[in-house]
Amino acid sequence: MITIRGFAKLCGCHTQTLRFYDRIGLLIPAKVDEWTGYRYYEEEQAVQFVKIKNLQRADFSIEEIKALLGADDEGLMEAFERKIQEQHRKIELIREIQQSYLEETMEMRNLINTFTGFIEKQADRPALWAELGLDAVGETEISARVHEQMTDWVTEIRNNADDIARQMDDRNRAVMKEVMDKLLADDIKDDQNELILSLSGADAEPLEEIPTDAEKVFSRDGWTHVSEWINELPPMKTDRKKYFVFTVRDDSPVLDFGFPTLLLAVMAVRHDAAKGGITCRTGRSGDGLNHFALYVK
Image (tube, rainbow, N blue to C red; front, side, top):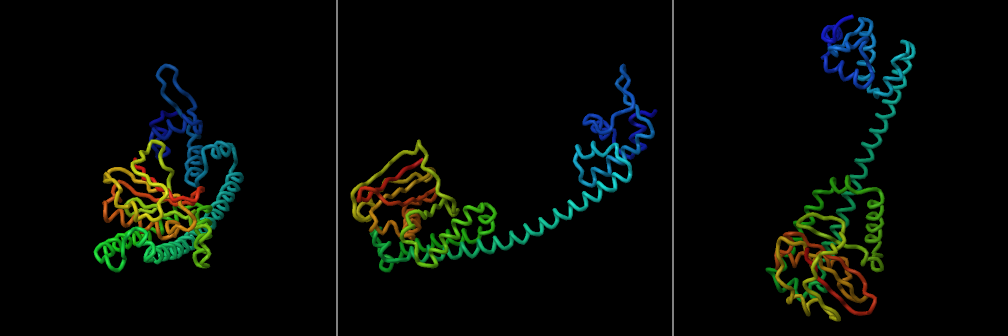
C-alpha cells in the first residue's frame, strides 16, 4: 500500500482530487488508519483512477461512471461508442438550434421593422395631433422634438431586435406575427385596443399591470377630446413611474394604434416624463363615455 501523496504522484493528480473521489464514492482508499485518518491505496487502484479520469473527460456523469466502474474494457468501449452517438445527436441539435436562431432573429427584425414603421406612420396622422390639441405642421418646434423623440425610441427598438428575439417565447412571437399579419392586411380596427405600446425611457417592454399601491394623481371623465384637459396634467416627478390609462368610446381617436406612441412622445418632450418610466394603455369603455386616469408609483 502507498500513501495518498504517493498514489497522487503515481496517478499524476492532486491529493484533493483523490479526496474528492473518495467523498463522492468513486475511488475509495483501500485502507484508512482509524487513528490518524491517513488514506492508503493499492497500486492496482491506479487503473481505476485512469478509468474514472477518462470517463469524466468524455462527459460521463458521476452516476454513469459509478455504473461503469465494474465494466471490462469491452463494456467500456461500448459505453464510449454510445456517448459518441449521443454527442453526434447533440451536435445536430445545436446545428438545428443555430439555424433556427438565425431564422427567428431575421423574422423578428422584419416584424419589428414592420411594427415600428406602422407606428411611425400612424403617429404622424393629423387627427391624432389634433386630439392632443397640437398642430403637426403649424407647431414646428414641438413637432420636431416629438418626431426626434419617436425616432430615438424606434431606433433603439430596432437596434435591440436580436435581444428581443431571444427574450420572446414561442407564444409571444406567434401573437406578434398575428398582429403583423393584421397590420399588413389593414384589418386591425377590431383589435387595436388590445395592442398596447409601452415605453420606459428608450426600452420597449410588455405592458405591466398597474401596481396596487400606485397613486391616482389625476382623472377626467365624460370628455370628448384629450385636448380638453391635457394642459391640466399635474407636474410629473421624474423619479416616479407614470401610467396613462384610457377607457374610451369606440369612435375615439385614442383607440388608434398610433395614439399611445404620440402621447408618450409629447409627454416626454413637454414634461420630461420618460425619466422614471412611462407607459400608456388604451381600451374600450362599457358606458359609452371617455375616461382617463394618471397613476404614479
